[in-house]
Length: 205
Image 1 (spheres, rainbow, N blue to C red):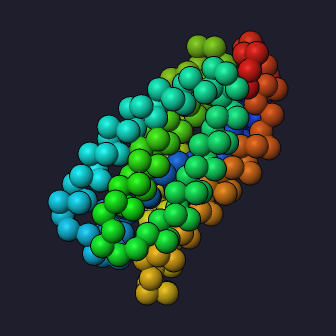
Image 2: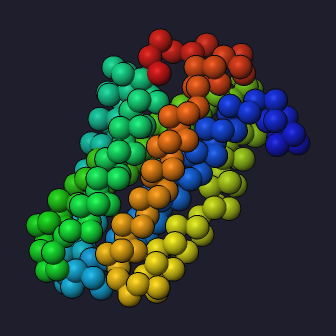
């Protein structure tokens, strides 16, 4: 029923589709980063635990930073910047040298800065593209779609790793999700999407 009704708001669905693409990349990076550090970079378990803690602590600050930036330049522009940072982090991951803890910690800082903020800000922006009083329906669709596509990223990572024998190429192959998400989000006229469902668009988007 929600899908049938949502067809009347194609711009909302367009943003939702873009979200499904890049959030799959985000979840995959979160899942395979420890594996990358252990098997490709030969880092000890202690370093991986420290990396996890860095990501968790920085993620809080990153979420706050996303909110501050969004208030000044708008949510859509902030999401686009965040996706660019994700692209840079993945490219940097390719060049991290084996056994270099500090380089891996630097990646952890980069991931932490955008990990929570990208999804949180995307959910906030999506909520403005939902008809008033229908939030539960649309966010259920949001969650179902996210779970339905969650296998794509791990499949790409595993497939590239298996085909090339290189975790470096496997990790950098995930840029396709962020690059595609960047293009798709940039093409969505967010202001029109918000106004189409009867909501008032904020001054900055």
